[in-house]
Amino acid sequence: MKNEPPHTAPQGLCVGCDYAGSLLNIGRCRPGDTCVRAHSGRQMGRFFRANAAEAILFLDDLFWERRAIAARYAPVDALDRLINDPDEAVRRVVAQRLPPALLAQLVDDPDREVRMFVAERLPAEHLDALMDDADYLVRVTVARRLPHGQLTRMAADTEREVRKAVAERLPPFALTLLAEDAEPEVRAIVARRALPALAARLLADSEWWVRLAAVNAADPVAVRPLLDDDEPEVRVAAARRLNGGQ
Image 1 (cartoon, rainbow, N blue to C red):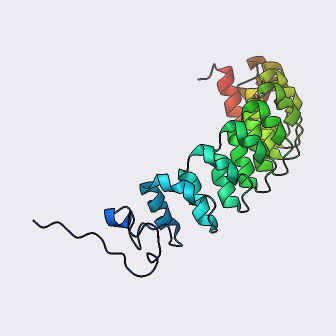
Image 2: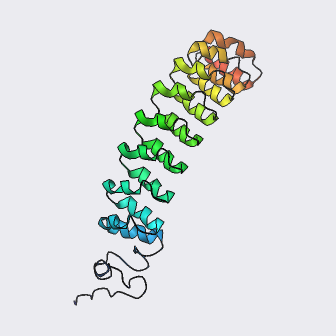
Image 3: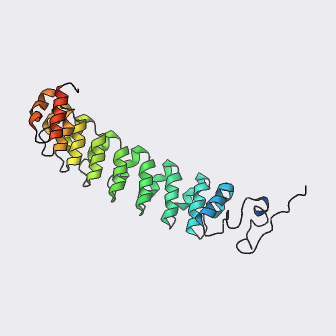
């Protein structure tokens, strides 16, 4: 059987390409499919998956998408040069791969998604730098990771979703901070996790689903008045609680 001839570099993107006489000939790039010069994210992605060692050569490329894809495959210790890249797509990749010790350099990034990635990966002891972030989704991420000793500082956040995240993580003894929150969704979380005394207080809440959430956390003796609650679900839950959960 005769040996197949090497690939011949076709016209188009292969003309003048450094890889036309090397990677093309051994099948590690292919016009229209696996090509670093194509303006196609899929083709560039396939190229770098097959030739990861080449990625570092494209971190300063003029095309933002090529830089962003190359950043996924380049050595981590080469990514610090992209911390201030003009394109947010590039910085998002950097925020996902940069060593945590260097992430503090991105806490003031103008792009929300970059800061969210930072909030997910920044060492917990440094998360206070993002506690007052302008975007509530970043603050929610912080509230889900912040050390318990600092969580009380976020109990007065202006955004309901942040306070819900805080209510899910505060130690039960500290939940009084949110027991009178303006949002019933927050109070319901408090009621579900509260110590018995606080749960008993919330059995009188104006919202029925907060009372419902408090039933199982309160002592049975405090639950008895809810046998006459206006809401059927609360009455059923109260009866079940008084019957030992049966």
